[in-house]
Image 1 (cartoon, helix red, strand yellow):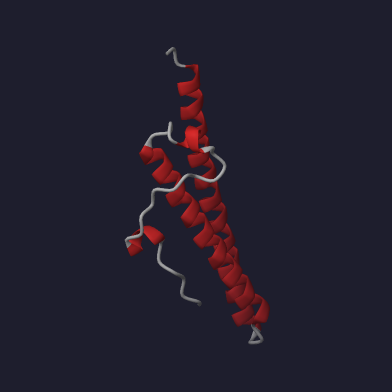
Image 2: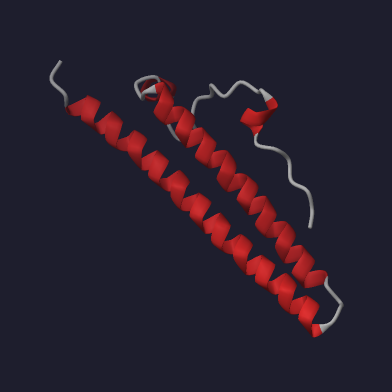
Length: 109
């Protein structure tokens, strides 16, 4: 299998970004830990998607025995499940920020 890059936070990179899809002024209203969690989930989803693409390429290009093709296909299906799980985690993290922003918008001043 192909090696994948380590998660960005493991490389010591700064993780304070404005999340995609939120205007700057609204992003600053979300608690930092929620934004960090959303970005972590996004990175895990993108890494899982890359692994899924690699697994598909390995399955599609295998010319070995039926058993080897079956094993590669099983690995591909597992990577599809992992990508779906990561995508769902990201969606939940985005929803948590949306709910937090909605609560703040409705809160009395």
